[in-house]
Length: 444
Image 1 (cartoon, rainbow, N blue to C red):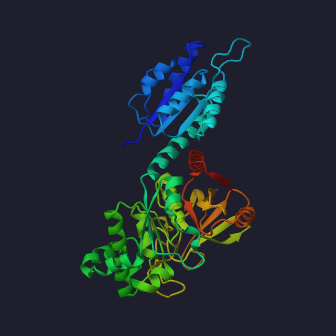
Image 2: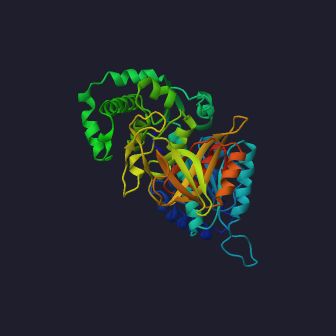
Image 3: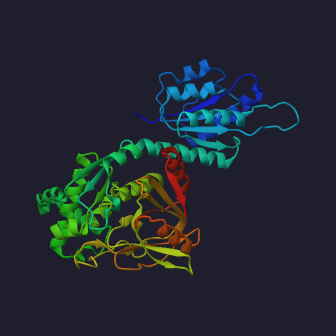
C-alpha cells in the first residue's frame, strides 16, 4: 500500500477563525514544501464530524495533528481510534500578545492532546513553532521522513547468513525482537547454502561481472585469478538470492564462516552488495546491517561500516577500520577503489582504500543494552581528507564533540564495536525515528 501522510488542522469556531484560516493557508504552503503529496483538507476541521468525515476510508502512514486553535481531548481520542500510525502534534505560538483575548490557544490544545496520548500509551512526536519558522519545517520534514522509514522497516526482509565468530555474538539477530521493535522480518540461511549456489556457476556466467568490476576497481586483476572468479561466483550467489527472496539488507558471517570454508573472502562481495542497493554488514551483525539500512535509506547513498581503532586528539578525529569491506562508491576520488589481500589470511580480493572526505557525516548504531532493550548511538561530524590508515578500508571522522569524551563514554556504556557511518547529516531523522519507535537515542 502506498504511504500516505495526512494533515489534520483541528480547532473550534469559538476562537479567531480569521486568524486560524490564515494559519491554515500558511501551514499548507509550508507542508507543500515538505512533501507535495500530503493529503490536506479544504480548511480547518472545526467539528468532530468534519474530522471523522476527512478520515473516512483513509489508511494513513503518518498524521500531523495541528491545533489550529484549542480543541478538546475528544478530537485526538477519535483520531487515534481511527488511525494506526505515527502522530506528530503541532502547536502554534499565539500570533498576537496585546492584553486582549487568546486568538488560538493552540499550545493548551497540544497539552490536552498529549495528555490523552500519554494515557492511551501512544508514542507521538511534537513540534512547537510558527508556520514561517525553518526549524518547524525541518522538524516536520525529519519526522515525516522517519515515519516513511518506519513504514519501510515494516516491509524489510533482513538476511542473516551463517554465524558470528566466537565472542562476536553482539550482532546476532533475534526474530521476535526485530519484528516487535522494528517490524523487520529476519531470514536466516546457512552459509553453505550460498557456497553451494556459488559453486554451481561456471566462469561464463560471471566473466562479464569481473570485467565490469575493472571499471570500478582498476587493480582488480592483480588478485589471484582463481580467487577473483570465486569471489564473482559468491557475489552472484548473494545477489541472486537477495533478488529471488525480496531481501533488503544482509548480515553475513565472514572470516571463519566463509573465508575458511570457501577459501575466498566475502569482503568484496558485501562491498559491492552495498553499492548494488543491498545494505550489508560483516561479522554476521544483523543490527549492524539494520544500522546500514537506516543510514542508506536516510542519506540516499551507501554507508561505511567499521570499528573505531584509533583517535587523533590533535585533529579531534576517530579512525574507523574494516579488514576489507566498504562500498567502492565512497572511496577517495584520487586513488579510487582498490583491492588487496586480507591481512590475516593473505587471500583476496578484499577492499583496500581510504574513504573520501565529506562536509557532514553521522556515526550511527542500533545497539542493545544489557537488559535487551534497544538504543540508538548517534554522533555528528565530518569525514576528513586522509589517506588509507591501515590495511583494509578506513574512514577518518572528525567528531563535533570532544573525541576522547566520545570514546570514553561509549566504551564505558558498553556499545558494540562496529558502527555505520552515513556520508551526510541524518541525525535529526534518526532522533525522530527513535521517538516514533520509543527507543532511547544517545547523542555523543
